[in-house]
Length: 119
Image 1 (cartoon, rainbow, N blue to C red):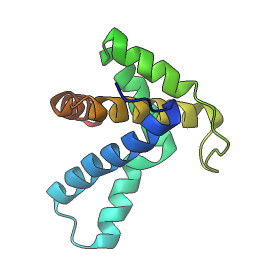
Image 2: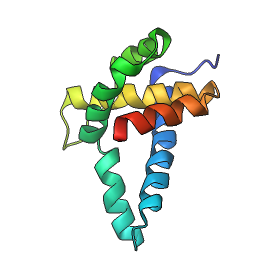
Image 3: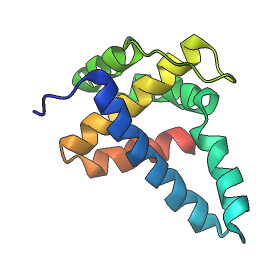
Image 4: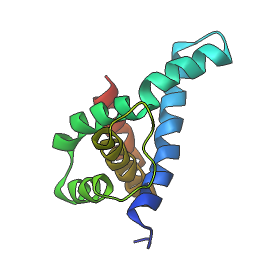
């Protein structure tokens, strides 16, 4: 496997998750870029991601759960102003799982989890 830190996995996963959200928002057919962005923020802010992370955790395999825990426990220096430290750590856990799955080529699993948590 790739030798990437937990925060590195979260960084990659953030991009993967953002792309999935953008696909979903575009599928709804928002009429302007501003409205699409506003809709995407509902999924991508740390508080929302923390909620999705909680929803995702019981769906994970043991290996995925290990990545989720390592992402949740990763040390970061900055917490967004609109989220608690706990919410930020849960959001990082979600992103780490998506990054890890992406690097393992598990795109079907990524889409499966995403569909289950945002439905």
